[in-house]
Image (cartoon, rainbow, N blue to C red; front, side, top):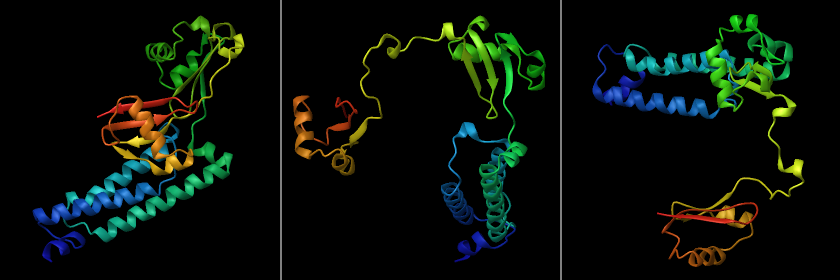
Length: 237
């Protein structure tokens, strides 16, 4: 009972049990807060988003570092911070003018194969880093590049000149099999019944496929998938 009181009350000396309980509560609080964060790709986070996440983490661990900090004040501060982050994110989606206030505009670093030295100095982007990013994008030569844009997320968008883009199957009128993400049928020795039903497949069909590959049973299979074009893949434990 005393340890439970240490979790929510102020105390000079936090016992080992109280520290463990506070840690569990802090982890649960961070988990549930992150569950309701606006879903956004990490590369699309603005500087405001990163500051928010940093402050959220600092608030969550504060009761662990100082036993005199009440959990009630931590929860209130975290909820307030989350509320204003939600408001700012909501407004940035509905107003492009407001979004421009918290999001940096893209910056052109290369135009028609020529470096924009002024923009590179303004964004603290040196030549070595630019060439390294271009090599990663399989565009090592500036002569092949039409534009290089530093996006607001901090990533580089590299647009090659038309004569240096790789040909695609459609350029040669080559038929391409249907694409898409493979569907998991077995995961760690367990059948995904929902996916089987969605594809209108049966366990008997699945067992037939495995037996043809020499797999004795479902439990011996670590992963089994089927691609949109019907190709069956499996991996045993």
